[in-house]
Amino acid sequence: MSFPVYQQRVREFVSQVYQLPVIHFNLVIYQLLHAVQLEFWIDALEEMTLPKMKEILNHNDAPSWELLRTLPNALLSSEFGTYFVHLRAQGRSSHSYNGSATGLDTRLKGRTQQHLDPRYRACHKGHSLLYNLMDDPAVARYAEIVQTGAYKGLEDGEPESIIDMRLSCLLHETFIQTMMGSYLPDKPGSTREIFRKFCPWYEIGLEWLPTNARIPLKEDFKFNGEAVVVDSELRAQIRRERMATRAYNARRAWSAQRIEHERETKRTLKEQITDPIAFMKNAGISDQEIENWRCIASARRAAWLKLDPYIRPATPIFPPTPLQLIDIRKRKERDEEEEEEEKSRVRKRKAAQHMEEVNSIRYGHDMNFLEMKYLQGYWDERHRRQE
Image 1 (tube, rainbow, N blue to C red):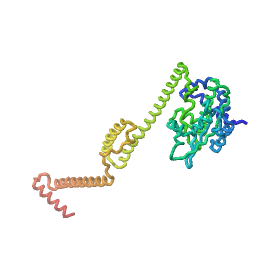
Image 2 (cartoon, rainbow, N blue to C red; image 1 turned 120 degrees about the vertical axis):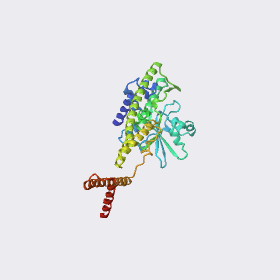
Image 3 (tube, rainbow, N blue to C red; image 1 turned 45 degrees about the horizontal axis):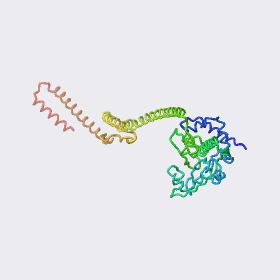
């Protein structure tokens, strides 16, 4: 029976893993993965995956627990392989966890029973979100464990066979974790976030929440209880590649940060200077008052920009407190009173000029001061009577 969609997903996953730089791997695992051709690991994954699991991953719809619970019980298996843990609680969201069993003595049966042992969980609770959820006293959760893959090629105890078994299980564990969406979210560009996006249902999500925090391909690769190391020359080469990749990511992050800083500067300038000036112009405030306020606000903004962006307030309070915006109605009343006073002064000045012209015409320019004063009083009295 063929599973074309599943086979295509396996091929895409292995191809994507092969294209990742070395910083996303354990050095030994990276060396061993690239020691053979791509097709070797594609065949290894297809051989490890159980037929029922192939059928589940062959669907276009996201996997569900109703389908996964039809897989064999991992607690009864004595094989090497991978498993899936479904943790559920009444009225709460369910959680998922994926792992692998490569211990020569424990295998799947012993490894999965460790998850159900309270004493074992107590010793590893600080490093596992799954154990913290299982031992949460506030919520009673029930765990079910099914088998997703089996490695059946280990017939002898040769070191090469053991290494091949463990590397195949780690790669298959990473594949199942990716397909099941079991990785916790992480910062952009991290290894965990890269593998999360390899999931075909990354955009829509699955029906459970993830709990896996570690990437199997980045963990120490052990043989007989000791971590396998690579030669110093390869390690130096990988260190140089890792430093170059970090420098490249730092430059990209710096560019993105600078663009965001410029965008934020323009936005705050509009909020702190441009918009208040437009408001004051609409309120009828004089240009001189606006210019005085702009000088004060610019000085406050310059001091605000020098503060640490992580501790400074989001935006200062504008306009500053020394500026008192006068109500439009009060300003109009004041302007009307000043205008009326100015008109009255103009009328009096014109009346005085008119009287001087009239007196000059009637009596000439040879009158003394007393005569002019008498005539001025006469004409004022006459003017009042006419009114």
